[in-house]
Length: 349
Length: 260
Image (tube, rainbow over all chains, first blue to last red):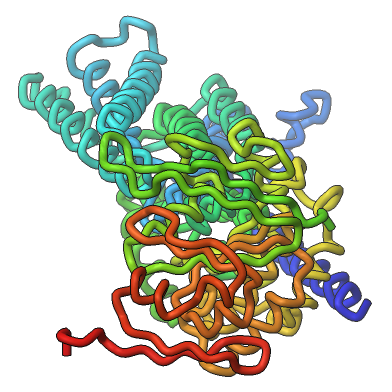
C-alpha cells in the first residue's frame, strides 16, 4: 500500500512539473508573438497591436490604429508569426518523434531525405518550371519533392533489407546526398540570377507567409502531431531498443516505417511553406528531455512548444538584425540555436 | 496477474534467411510455474531460442505454444501480454527514469495515453516487489548493474505476463546481487526461461535444465539429472566435478587432459 501511495504522489509531481513548464513556455510564446507583431521596420506599441488584433478577430470593434498600420500587423506580421509558431512546433515535435523512432539522438525531421527532396522540387520550380501553378508552385513542388525523396529512401531501404534503425538512417543520408547533388546540378545549369532566389529558399524564410498559407502547416501539425502524441508509448518502447519494443508488443519495423513516413509528410508540409530551417527539430527535443526526462508523452508536446517559441524569436531576429533587409531564418536558427545548444550541453555536464 | 502459462516448444528450428540453421529440432515442455535454465557454450543457440520465445525470431520450422495457442497466431500485443523479456538492451541516450522504464511494461495493455487501463497498481506493485520504488525518479542510466537488472525485471512484471524470459540475468551482478536475484526469481509465480552461463546459479534457481550444443538439444530434465560431469564434458568440453550443496549444486571445472 505504501508503494501505491508513493506512486500516487510521484505521478502528479511529474505532471505538475510539465504543467509549470507548459505554462511558462506558453507565456513566453505569447509574449514573443506580441513582440513579433510589434517589432519591425515600423515599430508599433503593444497596446496598439492588441487593439488591431481585436479588430481583426471581431471587425465590429473599432481599432485605434490607421489602416496602414493595421495592414502591417494583420496582413503581414500576424500570418507570418503564426506560420513561425506552427512550423516551429511541427519541426520540434517531429524531431522528437524521429529521434525516438530511430533511437538516434542525432536524427531530425529532415531524415529520410525530406529536405534534399524539397530542395530538388523547389529548385525545379524556381529555376526551370516557373510559376506554372501560380504563387503556390514552389511550395507544391517542394512538398512533392520531399514526398518523392522519402518514398525513394523507403524503397531503397526495402530493397537493401535495411530494417534496423541505423541502416534506415544511413539509407536516408545516402539517398539525400544523391538527391541534393541533383538539386545542385539544376543550379549549375540554370540562370545564375535565378540561382540567388534558390539560395534564399534553401536557407529558409517566412517572408512569403500570408493568411492563405497557414491552413496547410496547421492541419499537418494538428493531425500529424496529434497522431504522434497518441503513439507516444510506442515511441518510448522504440527508444528503449528494437528487441525490447518487440517484447512490448510492437511490430517494430512496420511501426517505425509508419512513424517515420508520417514524420516525413509533416516535415514536407513545413518545409514547403518555410524553406529549409535546420536545427529546430534537432535541438528542441534535447532541451525538452533535459527538463522533463525521456517520456514522449511529455517530450512531444514540450518539443512542440519550445520549437514554436524558438522559431518565433528567431524570426524576429531574422527581420531586425540587418533591417531593412531580412536575414534567412535558417542562418539565425543555425547560429543562435547552435551556440545556445553548446552552452546548454556544457552546463548539463 | 496472469496465471503462469504452460510452454510447449515443438521441433523448433530457426536460422537467418538462407543460411544454415542455428537451432534445429528443439522440443521441450514446461508446466505452468516451472523454471528452466538454458545452458550451453557460446554460439550453441541459447539466445536464438530465447528470441523465438519472445517473438523476435520467427521459427523456420516447428512451433512455440502458450497454453496450447501457437505463438505465431497471436497478435503482437496479445503475445506481449503473455511473454515478457528481460534483455541486455539499454535505452542509450534517452533519459528515461526508472518509473518510465517500468511504465513501458504497460504498453501492450493500454490503448490511450495516460490513465485508463494504464495499470498504475501493476506498476507500483512491480516496483515494490523489485525494491526499486525508492529509485523511481532516478535516471535509468545512472543505476548500478544490479539496480538496472531489478528495474528491468520490474518492467517485465508490470507487463503481467505468464512467461518470463531472461537473457543472462546474472551478467554484471556481483555475488550479493546474484544471490538476491536467485531469491527473487524463485519467488515469482511465473513460468520462467533464462539463459545462464553460471551453472551454480542455474542449479539454484531452476527446476529444469535444457542443455544446447550446436543448436541441438543435448539434454533436458531436472537439474540433478542433466548437470552431470558427463553432460558438461560433452557440451562445454571441460572436466567438471559436481557435488550437491544444500538445495543446489557446486561445481569445479578444469580444462581436459592434453589441453593444459
